[in-house]
Length: 337
Image (tube, rainbow, N blue to C red; front, side, top):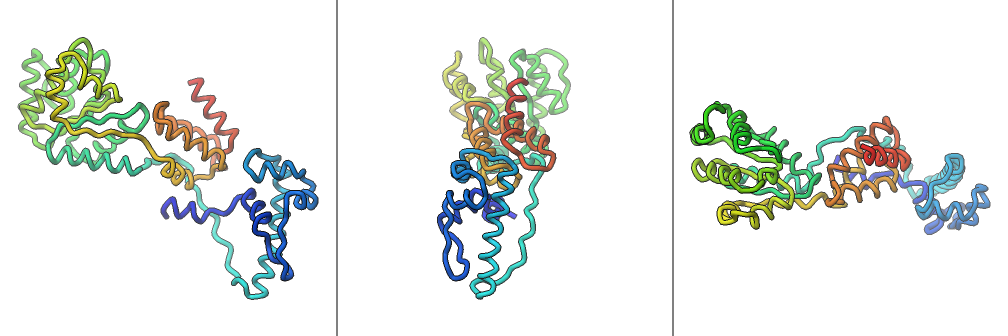
């Protein structure tokens, strides 16, 4: 079942049911009754101000107060339903099966995720040079790892700030299965021969911004591999990577590389997509709202933070509802870590 269908079939919350009794009312004995907060307070013993703030989503109430309100609202609804069935206004229907919630984190295939996979496939099929940029935590590494799982002969090379030219060439050689011995020139020639012989190979350099030090020689080697072998290559990194390729020192060579590339910019998950995901889990409305803000905050971790924090929440909930207390604990643990 699609997430939006699950969302549409979600049973109304107690807050929503209280507001419905106030705004729409119910028909009992042929008369429409609307219950304001004062009347509900008089019937249940819960203070009017407490009911008002609870119904408007401003506070959480004590479990015993919620139980009292739940029992009273359910009783009124049962009376109205029984009369509607008796008068033929509605047909009696069996109670819906309880919703089954997911309990663990899954791979979220958002629209942008699916689009990025398609663009990587296009890059591979057309043997292009591609640059993928996006803020940390937005999902770049998840996309390329999933692509490498689905497509054979895709080699992901994780770059490090401490990489020398020899280290970069060693990583490429080891990944594609050729010897890393000899001088750098010998390594380059050996790598080129292998890439030229195997037309299915694709190279993806994750965190490619780390290759930029005092010069651009490592980028020049990557450009040379693409020029000489026509191997599809993807450079992945934060927005800084785009700045390096367009404004870095030695930019005459870099601009040549950048001019030939195809670009993928990841902007992050949309709020509606987060809400559709969370509709598949048992989370309080306020928790869902806060998790949506976390997932869409691309400047501060985005989906990376969301997956980590929500994963801790689900573990702490142990199959139950993810409450505000659980979310607060997960966020505190994340900050301490």
